[in-house]
Length: 335
Ligand code: SD4
Image (cartoon, rainbow, N blue to C red; front, top):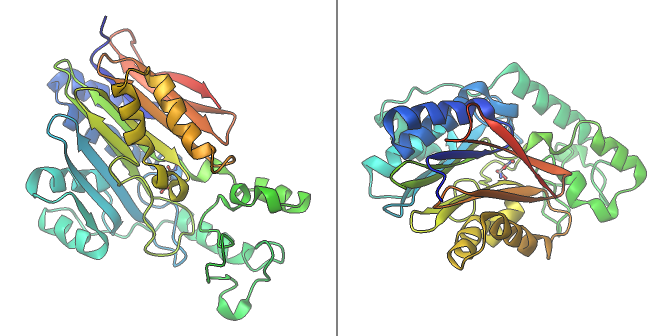
């Protein structure tokens, strides 16, 4: 039995699922469906972790990462650290379709986008300014950094990577699990939780079995300017092969990218695992080294069956539409 077409994406971003599905039904074009779905989240600023106005870096700037991976051609388009352009997934599509390259980054990716007709806009909002200001305040508090005192002469950050002391994003509390005192744990749960870390990863298969995977995100809060996460990296943020299936990840990209979990999940399905077992295997490989890491993986095989796995949270929601649904359904993987 097959269960096509299908759209699946990370988190309960159901409006994105629905818009991707509507495009898929109308056009039977997997790439357009994926782009419309991810763009929906960019425009809605899903959880403020996709699109403009979220996850400012230490200078307060929001930069965007996005990827499209085409499982028919094994071609891709990606942007990393994209500045001043709201539609990162749209630019990734241009890299895929209008160039022979795979991945453009930073300021020069912005220049490319400009030549493709994308408007240059500030990605700053009142919300991103608030995030910046509370970060600047919080990091000057004693106890914010484990084992080091804030250095006011250096904008209160340790800034020098000392072992793993530097905490580039809102996951400081997770990274520091072992070192945390109750007092700091309390602080962590007051506004520095995993809410700030929700990339959209989307997998689409049309009726003809064309499998496409992609991501769009504004990365990690308070990152060092220049940091790019897992999301735009092939095999890390997403991967697809129309002969097998596809997978996409979300979570602490600094850790996850070291394991190419989306590639791994697809390869596990190639060896015969179910999507769920493949996703679990990819997560388990990361958890073996980083038991408390925060992240989730979704997977779909070429028959349209889906699965997911996660770590570092209670349960991981993901959204699906297929021929058996009339509206987006949110499923949960238990971590
Ligand atoms: C990153 N993986 O830049 C992204 C963020 C994310 O769920 O997925 N949040 O690390």
